[in-house]
Length: 434
Image (cartoon, rainbow, N blue to C red):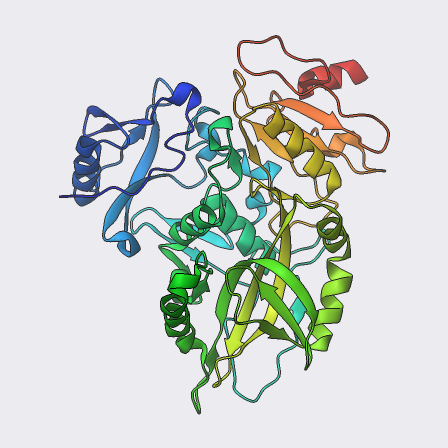
């Protein structure tokens, strides 16, 4: 019997309805046994289902996920996320309002024929034994000239977070997102992703939820996976990729160490040079993490494993997330996300990928409003509004907040309610300024 992987956002449709697709001329609801059989047949026949979030439907494709026992999943066609209805599970904000637009098609290439996505990375996944590697903290630049041809470490973390749909929020998720959920979705997001000619999933280590009574089994699985990163004489040493929640990064008896949650009995070593760079590069994020009890710190890093089994970090980047595991860059984004979650709103959190701090970025896109999804921007001090009013569809509603000079404006209302003051289409904004 054919099996179907959980469909993206299956439970987040407005009103609790499931996603529906046209497959082979017949309508199916996602999650049913008939749907599983239909998309398996569509995959074999090279047919393209259509998402029925709009009257005419939006073309999709079926991918087979080898890592999930041959399960099938319906995926949106490349560059079509913004063609779906905002309350559709397959909707994505226009790529130009996030960092995705810079890397899509260059650093990220999807192949609907095979269901594989090829990722170009700007950091090494191997090293020559005996040759030192310059450690970097961040793997990305705050320059506006950041390259979109390859993914930085931060860019890869943002991509996987997006693909895992951990940037999406709706009220029904409250209380249901924990580390086990985050890990499961990230691992599924890494399936069918190829980086430097190898499976990204095979190199990706995300700690299991730790349980004392399962300590030995968990450690055995961990060391089995890490064994591929132990150096062999005369061969390049493979590096592993780590995504984990940071508990602390502190001096050790020798050098420095990063302790991550759910790996209580094995710290990750890092040298003094990387430790010092880390403090300079991520000083604002580290300060917010230290001051706010409701903030998690997520780390992505490449690491090698010594013959004795000790892991050593080579490069790393950090990302702040809220209690709901929604990424935030600073205290202002944290305030906005907290407001949206508290008000029971549905939205997609925007991510920067490789973009520098000066580039316009939609902090969030509301998916519970009628018509085009409103784009929410937080404008830094000294930056002209025009940059934010020119990045996407001129008819899209835009909300601007200048936190240095005003309190947060009213948020655009949900569907069925009057539109709130404080936001306008770009056409209206341009007319008001003329």
